[in-house]
Image (cartoon, rainbow, N blue to C red; front, side, top):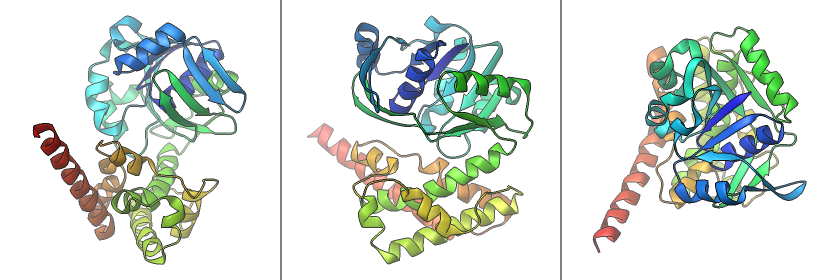
Length: 316
């Protein structure tokens, strides 16, 4: 199967290396020239439970070099989704399927606007990855599941064929007939901790040691559950405590959420697609979401302060 990964950061490379080693023609597309050059010259260095190895991958900064793919896996940052897919139309042929494995909600609508809703699949992955340097990742694929599905809940031949290809390559994948519910389940976990750590700069160990922050987390998750249920979404959890517990499961006390990591790197966050999604869905359903709205506003304030600092430093 010819697969293009749009956004070959740590997670994209972890999945891409697995699919490459599984025999698929897999292209890693990323806008960072140094990262792509390193992979083209030396291969992708993958550190995982098996040790360290070089995987000879196909990498490029130019979608035109790839041509039409059977599956395009979208893994760019949420706020880059529209520009990325519109700049990668060369990947989309007559039979191409576009699969989002991004965090949060809303990407599927952006992709549908760009390529047509009939082409779009959605999913969630629990595969992990850390970018250690240009062309070098730490990968966590073994024992981590990926779930994919049609937006309308149908179990089609194409989604089963993709899942089979992923499974045969060593990427454990399940087909869901409730992918929107699956996406919400993952969203609840992100809502539980992401914004709070971004605002406070706390690690998981610190966050879970503060009762006031737990109370805020549970209130935010409760709003998200109410919004989803009002929209008719079937969730696997209806107790906010469950999302709070799952968020930290198996993670060390020193762990930092992706939202905090983004801010520490001087990058904007995916807040609009996480807590912001709760606010939007709540507005549509007439469900109040004041806690999530406050968290969004606070993160926006942190981003503004960060941007002002960066501007002042550039002018100094």
